[in-house]
Image 1 (cartoon, rainbow over the protein chains, first blue to last red):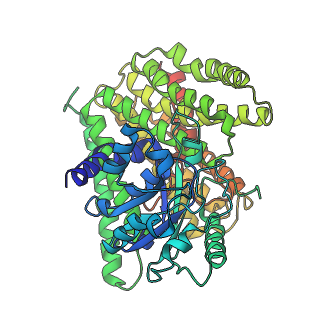
Image 2: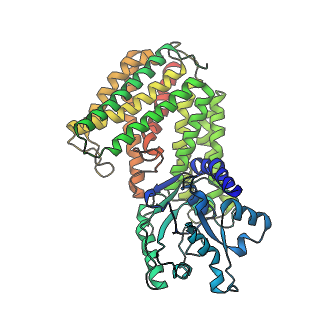
Image 3: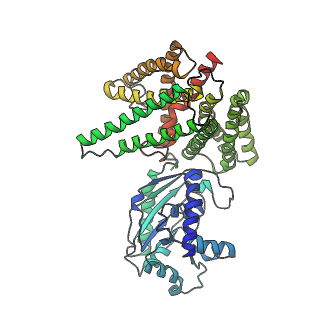
Length: 216
Length: 311
């Protein structure tokens, strides 16, 4: 309960004004964002701001239901960041080392799905080079294999990689595009899902305002 | 200055509110006649007008400093939007950070009324500073293009727009209107010109002016807008500004022409980038640049016309 209040305060008083003024979002198809779970958002990943911006799109009344799945090795390493990630952002830590058995690996995620939560999973796995989509990983398929009814909503974000790229501490104001695609099901194989997601990202790119359309 | 509005400016504000009420009522009437037609865009457009004018009038009435900060904020939003749509290099991030810092400095010169520095700070000092900061970062690939884009961005959104705020710092030569009167005169004439050119273009438009840049702009719309705006500006000039009727006709004429140019220049930018709107900030209008495109040209040109004639 306390962390729910903290999350609402953090997003209502700090994140929303910053996102509104310092960043500025060009949101397209906001109505396609799932407001109730179980559901899964699959955005591309450029910046730590991605998660914060996505969460800020949600009404404060359901924001505690939206939970980013995040790398345990990165976010749980420092006790202060771990406390913040778990209690304010509400992450579900995931072990990337491969030491955890598959049945236990997704335990936290499964509990969240059963609880009707909306999970955020970045299919690229990490932020990588700004504004370039890396080859997609297959985790989402294995996560949803026994939960076929959960739909995957692709989200394309562009611009945050300039505002706060990997390895930079200085936030420079830039507008960014957030374009929500149509929800898809995982299909019958992991390649089918990664292919469907890549196709979805490609189809959303032309709607970006902050992207240079003459290149590529 | 709090809550004491000069008489003529007060009536001008009432006039603008009257126009807004006419706009809203017309929409209600249209919807009553045509209940099935989707009028979302028109509704959003008019609603946004209410918000923008309410905000503007609030800061104008509140205080000079609030108005200066308000235009500083508009410069910030416009600069951010511009830098988000034009191609910039990742290496330029730190230079861009400095560009944002130029906004409070420029508006500080405005607030203390230091004309000499206000007029050269961005064209000279920021102009020389940008390439220097870029050299220290050391990325030479795309250097020339970036230096040009970055300086152009602050000239358009900070230097040009700050001229509106400087109107408030000029000595008051029309006691019944005050500095507020100049701002209302410039903003109203510029925006009214946009509306008039659109209206006359829809009504009579046939011969395109620059089809490659802006296919909807016609000679008929341009000339219709020019005549309407010139006439209205002539009559309202003595009420809201130190200008005489004749000088007001001249002001209306240059505002109509330069407003048109500002509009098509920003259209060319968007066309080059292959986008329709520069952002989603103002529902029904697009981005902030879509709204202030004409103002970017009219503000400095009207300012210097006035400055030459009366200061």
